Each structure stands twice: as C-alpha cells, then as structure tokens.
Image 1 (cartoon, rainbow, N blue to C red):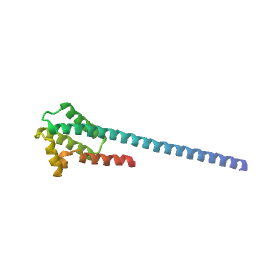
Image 2: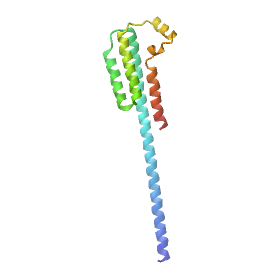
Image 3: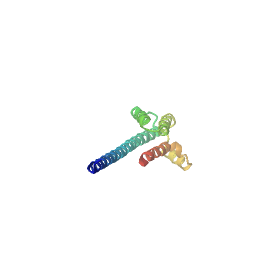
Image 4: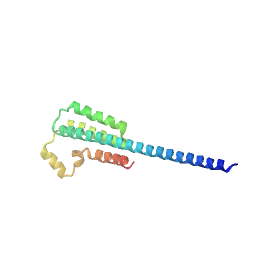
Length: 150
C-alpha cells in the first residue's frame, strides 16, 4: 500500500472521529440543557400551584372559622386546585391537600370561633387545629426540593 493512501486514510479517520466526538458532545449538552429547562419549568409550575392553594385554602379556612355559610366558589376552587395537584404532584402532597380541604369543610360545620378563642387555642399549643396548612407546606417544600436538586 502506498504511504499516501495510509496518510489520507489516517486523516479521514481522524476527521470522522473528531466529527463524531463533536456531534456526541453537542447532543449530550443539548440533552442536559433540555432536562434542566424542563426541571425549572416543573419547579415553577408547582411553586405557582402551591402558592395558589395556600392562598385559597387559608382564606377559605379563615372564613370557615367565623362563618357557617360556606362560599361555594371557594370550596370548588380548593377541589380544583387539589385535582391539579393529583396530576402533577406526589401522593403525599395530594393527601395533605385533601386533609386541608377536609379540615376546612369540618370548620364550616363546627361552631364559629372568636378571636379570643383562637388566641387561647394558640396558647394551649393547639396549632394543628388553627394551622391545617402546616403539614401541606412541609410536603410541598419536600417536593420542591426534589426539583431543585434535579
């Protein structure tokens, strides 16, 4: 074999290997960027959903403590937000959201509470009855941590 052919074949093989390596590196970096963008989008989506749920649930629960007539639109909104969580979130987070909705409904059927009674409940350390969102907030924070670390 002629030395010129060996030299040309070596150059061609080097070009092929270099091109393949560059293409593979580009593909891998694009894939990593796409995954990062997806994780950031999912994180933002969940943050917004959790924020909405906390705002609506706290308003509705506060209303339930002092009134016996439920605001049906707020109750339906709570159920709708919980249903959205069923699509996007972990079972633990959804279960906590269900417990918040249940506590809110129970509060509408319980006797109304005065500010003094709320204060006394807090002094006795009965925060779970006053803050039904505590467990949900912790579950939501744990779920968001999964997406932050991804």
